Image 1 (cartoon, rainbow, N blue to C red):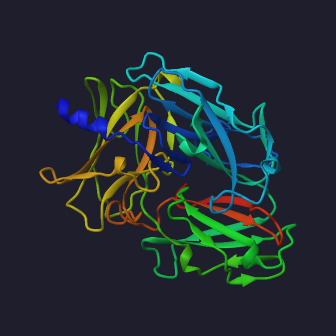
Image 2 (cartoon, rainbow, N blue to C red):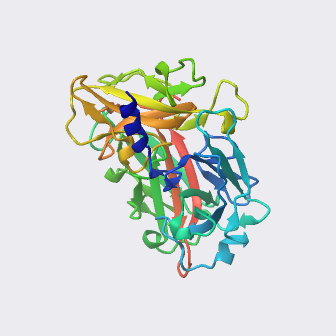
Length: 410
């Protein structure tokens, strides 16, 4: 038994990708990017509105690390905006130390919780668009970052009307959903929408399967429309599975058993099966919310636990199976890849996670959930639309519109 858990320790995630960022440091866990203290919100806020965004993470020790943050404005494709100066998008000084940190209290796994808020007394952000924040240790360089976090700031300039239907151009009320969009220019002076407007649509905040649109099928002097666009047909998937760990000594939602094997806590989830019929379950589309039974100082009192995920099914065609959510690796990372147990006829993986509420899906390496969870047009999904504008002669991509719509039963 002890050799098995030593192997698990070696397989702990060393590089994590998610919509909110990437983790490179071996001892970094639980990266969160939260707007206005609400973990249910996407990492998007409005320019010049009294909002703030907080980036936080844990380093798995009580040893202090002097972290420095570097802010970079990015284009619609998340590449750096090289044609503008730092002073164009940033008020204050870049490359400042992260001053908020606190050691974990009364936890088996020692960790230090670091947090960083924007705007702060040293920095304010001046332009709309995408922002990349890189965290690196004092004495190293930005290129040696231990993590990256990203978020977006938008201007409320264009109007966005979006509709989602199970009646698509390839099937009727089966396994897909199709998005239709109408974008009004508002006060923008758009001469060539195909060159000046970039529209990004994503399902459940997933950048790995987002659709980038530049050629509308309807255009006029006041706006553009994307209708009957096959690129905007998304597999509908199924409702997310979910579990919650509030107490390391008691089971809660989705948890079959809690156990202690020196030196870690272990939570085994109830096995899931491939669904062949749709059944509505209220979920939060793959988010993570930090919670514990004490409900006090969760950031430093919540425990880390090996969580064991199980998918009971014959071996599936179509590639490897991964556990995925907004909190996991995007794109897919080996730490969340499931191994097939031939004797038990199930996929298994153990992931080292902090106490809280989690939503998750089983996806294959092409991003699909059809063979692992099924695709049902009734599924409640969130669709987000980002509209970027770079007028003639402009030097950066403005994010001039953002909207989201939920489908289904919610």
